[in-house]
Image (cartoon, rainbow, N blue to C red; front, side, top):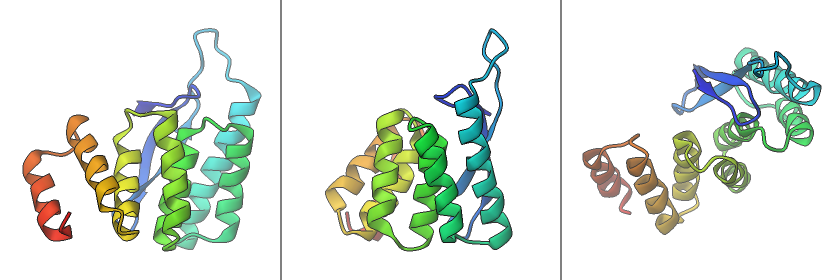
Length: 158
């Protein structure tokens, strides 16, 4: 379980057909035993969106509204931006998915999940130079080995 930038812990759940995973946030109290109400609200919206996604087996506009509300409440909710990117990617809305994954990278440049979804979006949009950068960054973060990267280069003709 990893720590979220807003003070939550998160865990991955439900791998979808494209191999992407959504993130459920769990409350992680500060050293003073308090979590801000604003962040709790964002967490609840995020988790409701993930539950809806799981039940509906895909992305509906309602799910995106929940994630947008969570992001409005807590603009630094990295998991919310990533979940939105995954859902938009699965809906083949690659430009919007790229925007959400870019925001997740801005919030936490050390998060390999953000680079992975962004690389996939860049490939779908034929932005090969950007995809190469993201895959290289995954290697630097220790989430991909060089051999796998070379296979991707050959398959995708990066």
